[in-house]
Image (tube, rainbow, N blue to C red; front, side):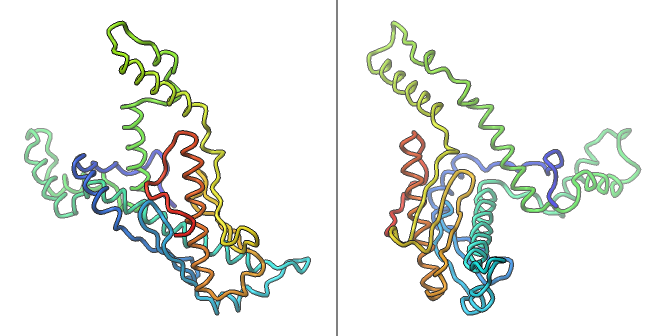
Length: 289
C-alpha cells in the first residue's frame, strides 16, 4: 500500500536547469524501459515519451489457456482476457518509464552512511544545552524522523506533486488568465508588440475553450477489418481491444500489429490535440512506422 497524500516522503531536489535540458536532449531519447504482465507471459518495451517499441508474447501458453475460454452464453472471452494482459504489461512499462524520467531529473537522496555523517556534524553544531545525551542517540532520532525505506512509487508521487506546485506558483492557473485583459495595448507599444499580445491572448482563449479530456486517438491494424484497436486519451495512454479472430495470427505478428496500432493512435491523438492548441510528442510518428 502506498503512502497517503499527507504522508508522502520529502520531494527530492531537481537537478540544475542546464543539466535537465542536457538530459532531455541527450539521455531521454535513448531511454528504454521494459515491463511485463503479472503472469510473465507478455513483455513490452517502451521508449522516448512512452512510445511502444516492442511487444512479445508467450503465444503457445496464452493460446492454450485463453483461446477456447467462453462466457455463460458461450460467447468467446479469451481475446478480451488477452487484451487485459497486454494492457497490464504496457502500463507497467509506461509507469517504469515515468519513474525513470523523474529519477533522472532529480538529485539522488544521500546514502545511509552519508546521512549518518550529516547527522553527526549536526549534533556537534548544536549548542551544548540542546544536544541529546549522546551523538548516537541524536543519529537514531534523526533517522526515525526520516521514516523507513521509501517505495519508488511514493517518491515519484512526492516529486510530481512538488513539481506541479512549483509550476502553479510560477505561472498560475490557465483559467485565471483573462484574454480580454491580455489584449489591452499601451500607447508606447509598437505594432509588432501589439500583434504579439493579440496572438498570445488568442492562444489563451483557444486553450481555455479546449477540453483535452474529450480527445481520443484511435489506431487500428486494419481500418476495414481490425483485429487490433488501440485508444489513447488523457485518461489512459494505452487501451487495447482485440477481435475474436486474433488467435489465428502468430504471437509475433500480433505483437507487431499492436505496436503499429499504438503508433497510429498516438499520431491521431497528437493531431487532435494540436488542433486544440496543444502539442504532444515531438516524434509525431506516423501510422506506418
